[in-house]
Length: 368
Image 1 (cartoon, rainbow, N blue to C red):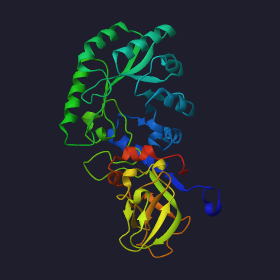
Image 2 (image 1 turned 90 degrees about the vertical axis):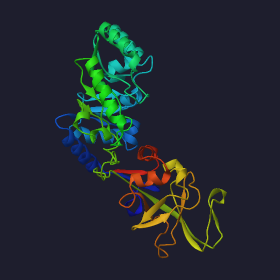
Image 3 (image 1 turned 180 degrees about the horizontal axis):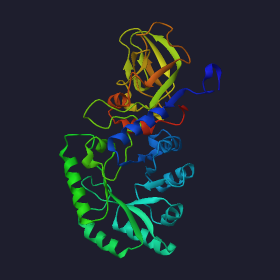
Image 4 (image 1 turned 30 degrees about the vertical axis):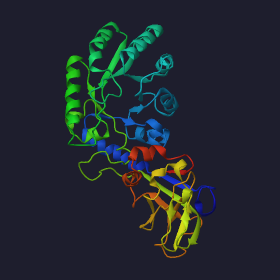
């Protein structure tokens, strides 16, 4: 630790509120009870640290975790209890089946080919292997397509060494409560359950939880809602914020009217101005698209970004503050009480998922 209790050399400070994370998990669990609540911790728990996040959720009773690929699963598994289930959403690349089986990790099988490979691995190991089957119900991204379902049924009948834990699909418009696509995908999922009797459905992501109990299935798998993001357009965001981000000032200056700011002279001051440069840029998760559109905050005052966001730094207009309010080492708020994930995503023309997962590893991280 350096002077003033800061991490030595740090220019940015990311706080992850594990108590808020636990509260969000509890809220979702109460909404879907008695159904189970899993946690999507892919992409390093949306950039917040998969191990720390998963341990906090495990302490709240979470026993099912979803990651994107086998590498993520293998990295996470040693930190968790032996009875925890880890599911690989993208299925398995050829040649990785044996490693997955021996680790006791569960693939989400997205095609007949993946099912056959998993069954062949079960043959090689001389035991039954469990998995999840995913169906495409209208997103056209992952899962068994409608015209492949007869072949899948024949393969399932022939593959007696694969235990299907549940059937899965993914909602494409779950955050839009009035979207007819949600009802259509649910209806298709129920047809699949009739076609493959004896297996329970799992279709609800974060937004799906808020669509109602008919979407909850045997298991819900929230991601963005756990991390405090807005998962539905139905009402004000009911989730507690989990992330706070502050960055440090590295220089201030006074400039006259007509001064160009940033690469390409993208901003030209129209009057004398006071500027500050802060130590975060697009390498730290502040999108280039925030240039001339976004802002940071200091003591509730909005301070607009001027000029282009650079790789390691961003310039802000601090004219609205009294002179001397910001000096070398002062911290400004990027995400916090005055600016939510959705606010910064809106200004950047993107979504909160991208803001979270783009947060770099150059911040001093605190878990509380």
